[in-house]
Every structure is written in structure tokens, then in C-alpha cells.
Length: 367
Image 1: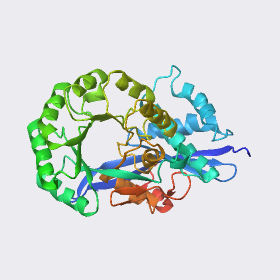
Image 2: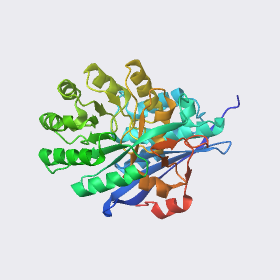
Image 3: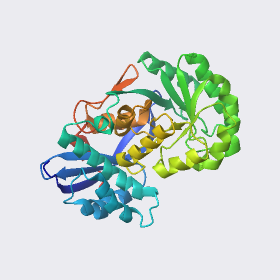
């Protein structure tokens, strides 16, 4: 097999403007860090990190991680990670923007490997399916109850049958529970309905609202607790019938192991933009298989995460986040779109998407 060599690693920061659908309320600007890795044969892989300390993440890639892998074969993922790990943290800790920098580099490596081998990332992960069923994160705190109901009906009209809404919105637990009840009544029992607190609640608050909404057939309660504390999450799981999920922001394998050790989690939800990349998500996926847990996706993972849901045989649902969807519509030429609640894996190799270079010029952040 001919040797591939990494010739260049490029990184850029981009700012996208979005709005809450239906009410057209502007959302805080969405920053994305894009990494491109080019080989000596001209293959270019793209990866991405999101949202936090974007200039810091870009500097990590440009000044440290990128130069360290020039000349290496992108297929040698273990060798590459062995070189980068001491740079991320000399004592092996898995934290912060260092992981975000590693994430966008690693995703670009998977993309370039796929393009060099003419295989999709889903196929390289195992190829269980060529699609992923999806749920839609739509129930934003900015919506009033009537908006929640109206938007749910719009999505159902487009063929979606799985919805997720926020609790811990600042309106109070009783008000949030009433919003959940109103949506359930409006959409009926045949629609999957999940909730997400975005790590906003104290342990006693999370358990209290869980008890309030248990009668409404909630598919899962995502990130219910502040910092998703393993001990508190384990205690909560023993006291509610709602399945618990976590992993979107700090979902590396050691964190999932901690949740498993505390019997704290029902659904694994890694996000390759934050946890160190697809190489780390692959470790998480194997752990989920060992413990017979479903593997899903959260945190606006978009096209980067739909591949792991499709690739592994215990993959269940990929997330369509209405904010992320707006970014991908701007960023990519013809991004993958759901049809009747299912996303087909693009036929093109790697992640199967093409950057819109004109949009990248318009959204480039230089200072």
C-alpha cells in the first residue's frame, strides 16, 4: 500500500448568524473552527470544532498540533495520537479547548482517510447502515408554549416523529413541566418526546421535574444535572423511570466509564467535535457495545456525528438541531437533509460534504 503523507494543515475561524425558527429571534453568533488536512497526493480532509474560545482552538491547531503531524501518514491514527497526546496534556487529562483542537484535527484525518480509500466514515467505523434515523432538537426556551406546539406540528408535517425540547429554561420547574405536558397533549402518544436540561439543574431540581413529567412518556432526559456529576446522576437514575443520557460536551471514554461505574447512564451520546474526535468516539462506541447501551448523538454534532450512529450496529438516533442545521445549510454545498425523519449517509467518501468556499470567505473571522 503506498504511503500517504500529510503535507499541510490549515485552520480558520468562521462566524455564522442564525435565528430561532418560527419567531425569527436572532441566536447568539455561532463560531466554527475548520481544520483542513492536505496530503501529498492532493486529498483534503475537513474537520470542525465548535463554539468555545475559537481563537484559542485555532492557535492550538496552527501552532502546535498541525506542525507536529506534517509528514506523517494520516492512516496511522494511533501513532498520531501517541504524538499529540503529550502535547494536549502531559499527564493524560482530557479537558477543555485542547480536546476541541484535537477534535477538529482528528475529524479531518478521518475525512482524508476516507477520501484516500474511497469509503465513507460510516463504512470505516463498521458500516452497519447507510442511514441514521433522527430526532429534532426544536423546543427552545425562547418559544412560548403556543410556539412549541406550532413548531412541533410543522416538523411532524415534514415527516419527523421524534422531538426534543428544553427544560431548565429559567421559567421555573412547574412552568417547564406544563410546557412538556402541553406538547405531549398536542402531538399525541405516537410521537417520541425527549427533554434536555443542558446541565442546568441541581440534583434535587432535576429529580423534581423528572417526577413531574414521568406521566408523559419521556423517551430520555438528557444532561439533567450541573456538570453531569456521576454520583448524582447515578442516584437520580435509581429514582426515576425516565432513561438518562449524557456525553455531548465532555464525552470522552474515561467520562463514560465513570458514568458506567456509577450506574448513571442509559444512552451514550458522544460528540466528536468536543471529545477528541472520531477516534475517541470509536472508543466510546466500543464501550457502549460492551455494556449493551444504545449509541446516539447530541450537542449539534450534525454531519460529523451522523456517521457514528450509522456505522455501529448499536447506533440509534442522530440529532438534527435546528441551529446546527442552519449553519450546515450555509457552510456546505448540498448538505445531507432528513427525509421522513431519516438521514442518508452521503455517497461521497469521508464525511461526504463539500465546503462552500464563497460562504467561508464571507464568514471568515480575522481578528
